[in-house]
Length: 238
Image 1 (tube, helix red, strand yellow):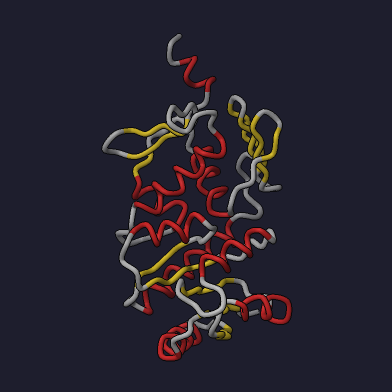
Image 2 (cartoon, one colour):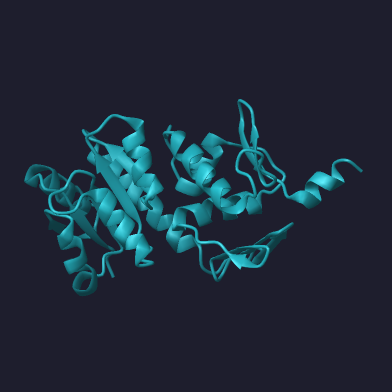
């Protein structure tokens, strides 16, 4: 079956452009023009992904994103914004968006990013790698997509979970921001590395005792990040 994509934008010319290119790429596409209409479409249409404009009537993109995640709806979201301020883009990521693009954008790049998201989703089941990671106080159950700190569940967005899982699979290794973009976001082009920094910050807020002095996700200056738990830290002093 073709993947279903819901396009949410109040500019008909933008919606038509996106719809044309997504249909050309083989997707089933529906378009709506305001934020409230998203929730009217969830049950009858069941989209596999939502392309969501930030500035919408009735309910803006941030509110839509926040409400979907509050309902534990993990549908991937690509947010569109005409705003150049990075804080507006970060706000979308803060509230559960998986990716963002700034208008004007290349329709071909949008298609590429959507394809990358679907590739990641499809590659998750059936992994032959470790299904549980125990690193100090941190416990990650891959198949259940569950994370615990000191036995207490931690709520992560889908993208935060994928980033943490990628770090766990490469624990102890220094990973550049570009490696993380490629491994987690599947970007084969030069992406915006601030996406990585925002998600790392969110992960630290959720799994670290003190995000300013992390014990798990360490910054390697001028390079990127690495995951090392207390066990790795102790062995380094042996």
